[in-house]
Amino acid sequence: MEKIKAFFMSKRTYGIWLFSALVLAWLFWTDPDKGDSTRDMLQNLVSVGLAFTAAHIVRKFYLDYIKLQDHVDEAKKGNIGSGLVVLGTIIFTCVAALIFSTRAHATDVRTYVPVGAKQYCPELMFEKNKLWPDHPDPAALCSLVEQESCISLTHPTCWNPKSRLKTSREEGAGFGQITRAYTADGKTRFDALQAAKQLEPSLNEWTWSNVYDRPDLQLRAIVAMNRDCARRLSRIVSDPAEVLRMCDAAYNGGYEGMQQERRACGQRAGCNPQKWAANVANVCLKSKVKWKGYGASACDINRCHVDFVFNVRHDKYLPFVRPT
Image 1 (tube, rainbow, N blue to C red):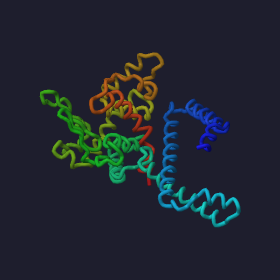
Image 2: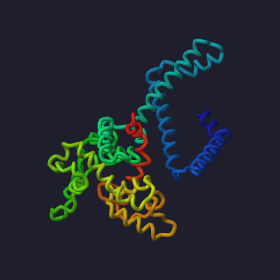
Image 3: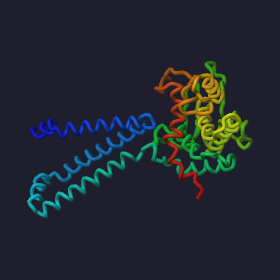
Image 4: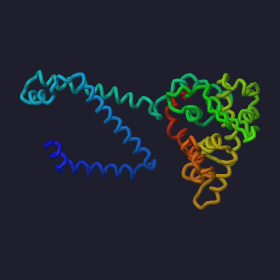
């Protein structure tokens, strides 16, 4: 207890805390992602700390007979045997920490590739090469599927053509959560599957009766829908990267809604309707009310969709789309 009290009372401790606070403030101040990168770094540090804590507990459980401080004291006196015990204990702790740390990062959304993606992302690229061979950023198609189908990276529906979200008023199917919705009296309000068939003749045999059994057509529809949006938008937005981001917002929230937000952006001082981030993205005309069961509003979901597809999930799919 006295050692703990002395530690917290020492000037060195206060100096460490002050230095850490200054470094943290500097990291936030210089963060190009407005705090997101710093947050991720701190989460990694915390996970490493937890890994070493778990490793320490494991060491105490399995090597409880080793009184480490006694061996440290003996090693200082030149006892080689005790020195080897200390070294072995340190190695054991570090290996255990590495194992726990690896497990903690195993499903990091920025690096972990779901099992289904390893099968179907190449198939998605096959469909892309047929329908849209000059796609400027194919990895975005793979990250879109993950965003649409993965409740979590290890969930059974993740990258699964059987993925289904169904309520009394709506059904979302497959990789791209192709959706049909109904009015209160049961009539069809919109049917994205039928709309996709109008864009690509090779989707003609796709129906709601076989929608879950045709992963090839699901993937083809994703390519066709994004291709159609890009063709329309490229006539008025010059940067292909901006086109893709706006089309991702349109895939999630509708093309006309995205265009209305571009128009609203153009009417605001300093807002460039040619750019998504910090411009059109800041002009959301969708509902700000949180949906029951989602914990987020239509506006939040739409903006999060674009952010995750291009800034979070994207890079880990680059190896799947590079020419071999």
